Image (cartoon, rainbow, N blue to C red; front, side, top):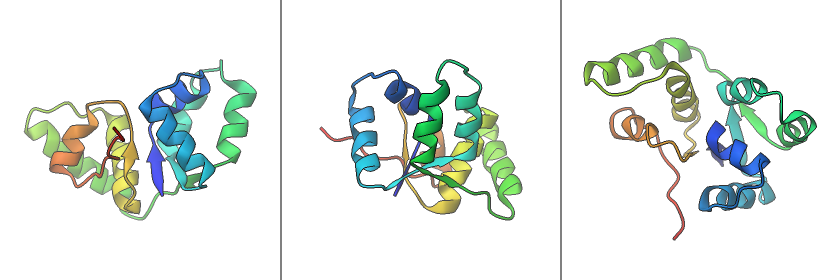
Length: 128
């Protein structure tokens, strides 16, 4: 099972071919893909995907929030900010969902590297 970030889903919905969207397609075909709830919110923030987004979301499971999620996310964000690293709230919440569920994140956003180095987030390795 993997989780996907907003950037990869948007590329996929726009028909962009990349190593990320190919990995996403592989996970979709194997039914081994999930999505953090914050990503769902980010996707619905753009009205241009409409029906395609609804069809896509019906094909995958969401990563539900576990007890203590908000506190753990806040502590991880504080840890990164104390190191003077970029830690956007949405990214923190996405990372925490993946950490809590033990699933690697497929993303093209380099900011998630901070969470991988300091907060136990697993990032999906890219095929060469």
